[in-house]
Length: 283
Image 1 (cartoon, rainbow, N blue to C red):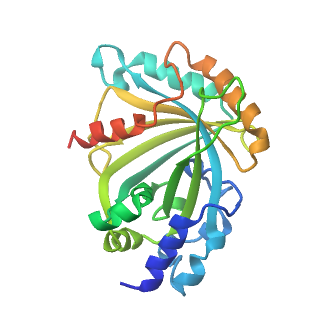
Image 2 (cartoon, rainbow, N blue to C red):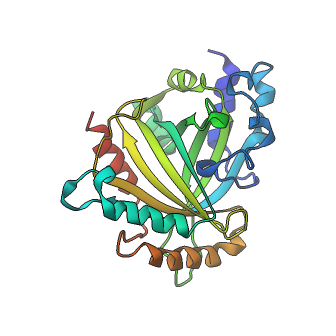
């Protein structure tokens, strides 16, 4: 294995102090793709990979979110659920821009030998998401490596009502999947995801993104893991925490338009892990 690859990844894991421009990786479109992504994915890394994956390409931002599961009545499929159609229409009317994406997420956990684990228990926290975009065409084969950390929220009335995470995001080549396995990262989950995104106040600092996500067993997106439910999230992204209070208030106020369809809330830290385990167990 190329030693430089391992060093790049190790530097990324340990990097927690650099400040970078925020970026909505879940809701990228042609207008907000960074300049080094505006090219065919297969040609991104033809030259020196060390130069292409320089640390200046790490994006760091804070993600604020509220989540819920939409479940149809009587377990009917979402395609046949008129209430779900109404729900989507309400979101569409309340948004400025909407898009659809497909991607595959690989969840990696860092494995350490028992003797090392005793000496450096913090190594257990090196968990990553590897995302490969499948659609739309301008994002096809673009890959992201992400690390999530819990963010501290200032003491305001909104504290503990909104989930906040620090996201470190790195644009990488598809070969990183194999490289990660070679340096003690274990693939714990693979999930195929179809996402509909809706922006409110698109392009402004108080932009709110609504994501409606469905999960599938296959790369052709023919067999949903659950036919009667979708994960709904609203998110805002900041790279300047002085607007954190206002952002949390905006998210909490925005949840009103979703009633009575879903009750968006801050979820337990293991909420997404439970969903992943449940979906993964459906294979």
